Length: 321
Image (cartoon, rainbow, N blue to C red; front, side, top):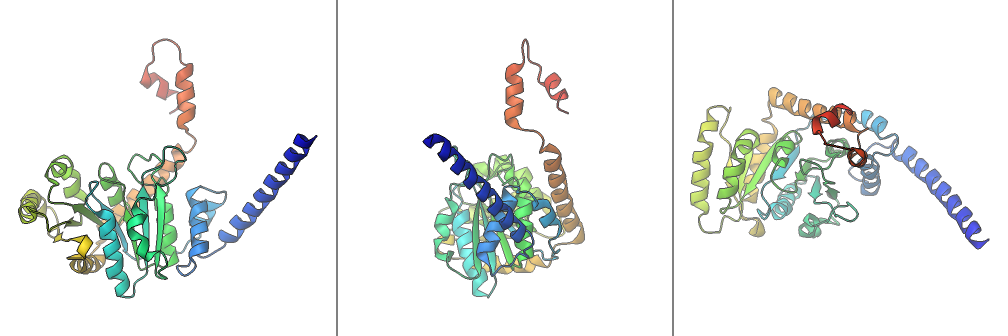
């Protein structure tokens, strides 16, 4: 008898929570994102992030923005991306700018949420009225970015932030995908990055707008910068301008002001062809995600387990195409 009454009570509570959630979604999805209302903005992003019912209608109603203010920061693990982001926030807010930061953290293997490692280095900005920091889990996304990073970024643009900084998990496919998202792609390296440069130089030369050699107080920094310039030399003839290389030491804020000045200058340098390419990349990813949303990896796995005899991958996928 007690178990039955508990189950009825739990069902009632669940129905009440669902009703409250529908009311919350209805309220938030009629809300115009505002950089001064962090709490409502955070809940709105959560509903978009989790694809709550009605989120696509909400996104279609967002006002368009012509600002070229999205900075993508990528680079190998240990390059000091989070420390550099922290220092860059200080430079931008000192000029009266509002800044939103999206930290793409690795996913927890247990609950698939963000591990929040990047935010530890930005704790001094938690209560700043002009700084909004949000951690997003990569959730196993191929490119090291959140599956709905484009949608979340557009919400922040509509909120009116002067600058939006996106920090990726690390280098790999992510430096290519961040180029399709950011207006200005900043690649952070350290003097010891010689081996990483060899493995990722093709992608870097194609997508990098700015190179930052961080921890430049270490031995060999000047030689590394010279070698990087030599490596990039063939790319200069194919580009309208030379790719800036900035030496910084984010821990002591050295060189960060020069980086900020370059970013502000580049904000006004994005040409129409580059902008169209960025929009095309975003549109492609959104269309791809929409067409793939009916596919579930667990369904594929269960179907594979039910296969008998010799398994042919190409015959298998033909059933799903």
